[in-house]
Image (tube, rainbow, N blue to C red; front, top):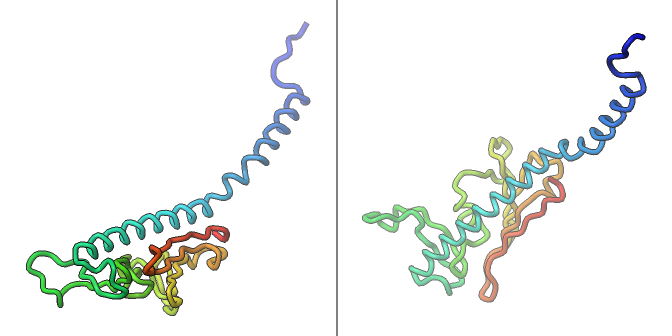
Length: 167
């Protein structure tokens, strides 16, 4: 009697069907890598801004400006540097205000204004009153993939909120 070796046709079909089912359930998870990367970058930017706001607030406390509604703070002042030669950040109640000279300045050349047409940066910002909206123009829906910074008031600290629905 001849001994059988290898797979039967039925075994081969069953293995292919099982692999197809696994691929169909696992593929959507792996297809969403770009969106996950955008959300991670947005959260990284938020953490960087929180750290920057904390540094500004610490310097404002040392300068006695934490209770003032408006002011300017010299961020890069080292020993021997005059106050006219430093990079000033505008503040509101000790934290960066929502302007190009406030929160946008502490990011230092990592963003373009929304009015710039030739931008090679990953982030774009738009100033809207007491709020700065930071978004990625590369996101599928940049209106819903953003970070919002609202300036501090006398009774509330500044807020940093992310919207990652459109990433």
